[in-house]
Length: 318
Ligand code: COA
Image 1: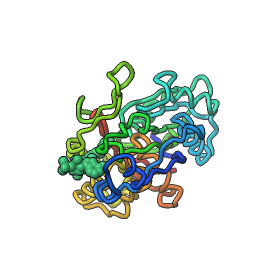
Image 2: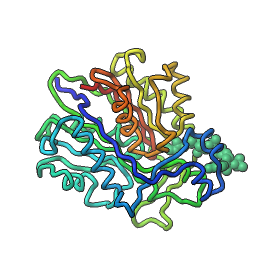
Image 3: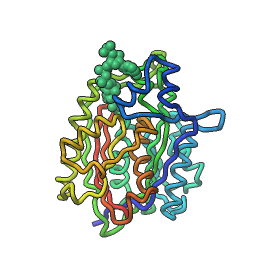
């Protein structure tokens, strides 16, 4: 049977760094409140004057992942971008990426919206599509520019989110393992909402923080346990747990509940904030580049978000 492995990762954070003290100049908040409630110390926003955009972040993260994999754009058969904040509804971010990197016409290009769980969903979707694709490599990007949908007068949301993109290249081959994906969604239209085209102005993101916190602390441990069960491995056999970076307290809760080694569950929310679909692949890439994920490692990734959605996979690095 054919399965997949990750053969390369990349990421891109924009250049405009906003510290908690910077946020305190915009809304009634403080470094103390934000860092103790969330673990966030700074986040990055696109500097449009410097030419940074959703498209440029996607392109840079994707190009870096292909470079790390030693794969040319012409070798990619599936190109997925998980996002809900692309520069345009159509053409898709995936088609723009195809144009930017020069991927062939028979590349399967599409965007996918599962909010903050989007990248993990995307890995599973790519695994399903690859056996029927023209070429055995998939480029999966998670990217969001939340600064586009933030209400900078709402202190309960604007301090939490940042912009960023991450990417991974999957190779499909005979003898490679399955991802053992688990997923779910809950058809919830009120806990976390970012209105789109045609909706009432202003179209900002709205969130019931406490409801999402309750949901997240329920699904993250459950998702982890379900992936381990599906893969028939113990937590000790997993080298890293890469969790969606929405709030350090959510990850700490899951780590404690599952009895995981905190060293294996290191996050990066302190300097990224919540980058939605970018969150998991940015952390993944930072760990790879720091030598904390290496060849042969098994990594459990899990995310949750608006929808309400959640997903988990166990992926092996080639
Ligand atoms: N600075 C200062 N005070 C703030 C604030 C801010 N940025 N945001 C909210 N507050 C205030 C509230 O107004 C409230 O004041 P009150 O007690 O006078 O009414 C107080 O802080 C406590 O608010 P509460 O919402 O209970 O805080 P919390 O401990 O639940 O933390 C979140 C709020 C948003 C950090 C937390 O609920 C959370 O992380 N939820 C999940 C969000 C998430 O993961 N979203 C992304 C999903 S992908």
